[in-house]
Length: 155
Image (cartoon, rainbow, N blue to C red; front, side, top):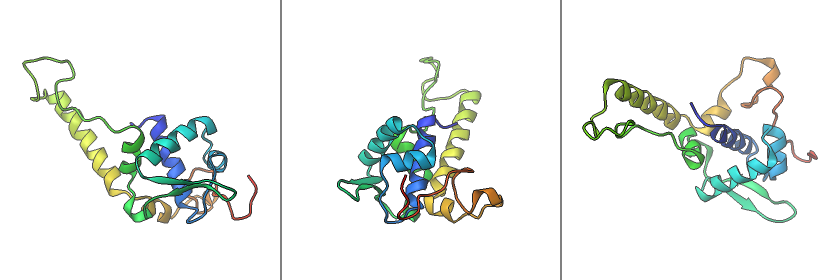
């Protein structure tokens, strides 16, 4: 449904959201999220261009979220790196169809619209606040084994 790039971006944003005002380096984020650091750097650049993250240089530099968690939706993150593609005209390029979609393409577009709305309605704050039922997650919004960096921890 979403691309690997969008998945990586979401992991990075959730990781940063869990850190509050503590900047994280690309390497720290890569270790926590299990995203290849070279690819993550490109993802973080795209998130920066979209105004979703900021970067700080220097000894205690790294990346931070540029918006409050409750004002950052899953859709914002996805659209920053690989937007969902709605069907606006006939995918077969049939001139007679134009914007009048056949029943199949109309249903596919409606499903994409529903997914888009669900992602729009879900904020990073909601993801971080959602309780987990698995003890192996240790109250982390990331998958098992992916835990936020604690202050003073060397990664």
